[in-house]
Image (cartoon, rainbow, N blue to C red; front, side, top):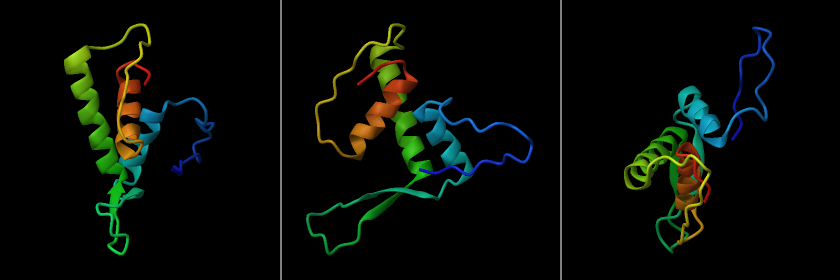
Length: 105
């Protein structure tokens, strides 16, 4: 995901200084309708995939982060959460949401 930044004000780029949730948040704010993922909703690959936008991904991450906080609270010691499931976009949502809550997956 490439974020265009306005550096005309003389500021240095923030590469390597932001966490993945912050990059996603900034992308959702800057270009909410920007496609970030494709999901095939059927085994029939002749059907077109569903496009997931930056705003949709950001909303999904925030929803899962809320759920993690509700069930487990915030981690103070970078504890681990186990995710058992398909390694698709759901894993990425859980991964980014866990970072927001102070966990690793």
